[in-house]
Length: 301
Image 1 (cartoon, rainbow, N blue to C red):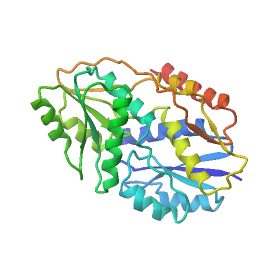
Image 2 (cartoon, helix red, strand yellow; image 1 turned 180 degrees about the vertical axis):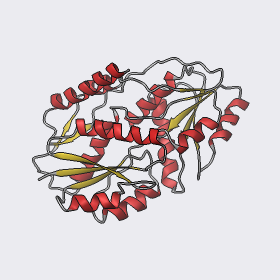
Image 3 (cartoon, rainbow, N blue to C red; image 1 turned 120 degrees about the vertical axis):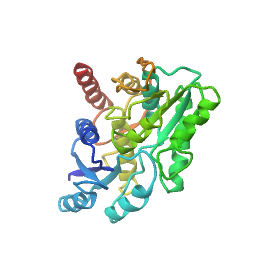
Image 4 (cartoon, one colour; image 1 turned 90 degrees about the horizontal axis):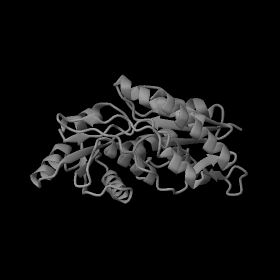
């Protein structure tokens, strides 16, 4: 029986943001376990809307999991997607997660940030208290992943402090500031972050191939919670070396503030292992798919 992962992003009116989401969907399809389909969906702004995608998938299978392509807990994960799922499993948001921390550290280092700079982890913001907790945990994971200087959290909307206030507070202490764009793709919130006028601003997370490990881990956990524990399709782990290979993926170009320096300095991965997903075959097969993706990314660069 076919299994379906519904990858549900927020949606954006900016075409460059839609391109990034479609690229991430290509990564997910390229790394999907055998017999698992990846369906595109959005919770807001434009279609295909998640309610319609769920209805269409239900006509073919009951083995469906919704995985939010969202970085933190919020109204969409706690209310909108639960309502759209109508009893189907909904995985948690992608963050907080050590893989996201590794990607963010790579993006920050690509701006030319120094060890004494203050990193402002710039998130979209939410009225849900769990979102602030998630972002604070991400800040801690970034410190563990290699940020030597202070890491403070700030928000584009709904929560405090706002990003410009955090930037000004760091400058008042005599520190250069780096806004770490904690958004998936270019769009409204990435523009808000850029307008905060930090000394350096990192690129959004983008369609980094390492995100596939997070998505499939979330899918496997949510699916496993509603299926027989002795099912033949238990999740297959990715070897630790895969994450080290993944961390060498091309780093997106940073956004430079006037007079700011830019210089790539990608970090290495943490080496922890994550799940790829049920029926994924051997870890070697999953590794080969990821390696092929990274190779294509380098050739395009």
